[in-house]
Amino acid sequence: MHHITFLQQRYSTAAKQLGEPAPNKAELEQILAAAVAAPDHGGLQPWRFLIIEKEARQKLGDLMASCYQKRHPQATTELVERQRIKPLRSPLIITVVARIQNNPSVNKMEQILSAGAACQQILLASQALGYGAIWLSGESIFDWNINEGLELDFDDQIVGFLYLGTESEKITAPQRPTVTDFIQHWNPSSKS
Image (cartoon, rainbow, N blue to C red):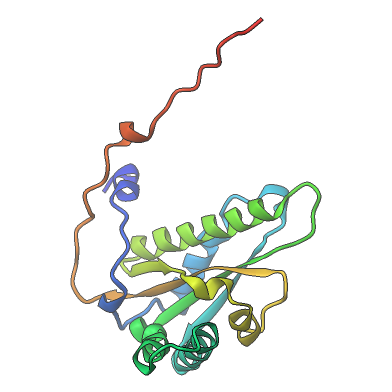
């Protein structure tokens, strides 16, 4: 497949369709080597990758359920339990964190965008190696209790939970929108 075609056909797998095997240690290193090739203004390397697998997924589920209940005290048991089982949807989760640094030349947004670019690199590298992947976020990424439970620093910003595994069924890339619907040419008028 041509490289451009590969990029154009990238898709997210439904998390419920991800099973064993997950990328092995060597493949995971390749995936993360692609992640650290993300654009990085100022060379700050503002990303961190928390690898969550095996029993740690259940602990993440317990943390997510507990934090959800704190955010939504009136939540039903069913809604809380849905949070608890989320991390069990794939054998491997990479939590991508923007480690925000105080830098007058590289603002917070640029550092978060760099971590977001690292997420995209992970998705592409996973698919290139034959694995399914999906980037999920939700309100949990803004919950300080989740950060604290994951032992992150105060200024750290979770950018997403990337679920990786083997697709239980192969899906085709979704129909994409027409590119020209999103293009606008800028040509400033000359006013004297």
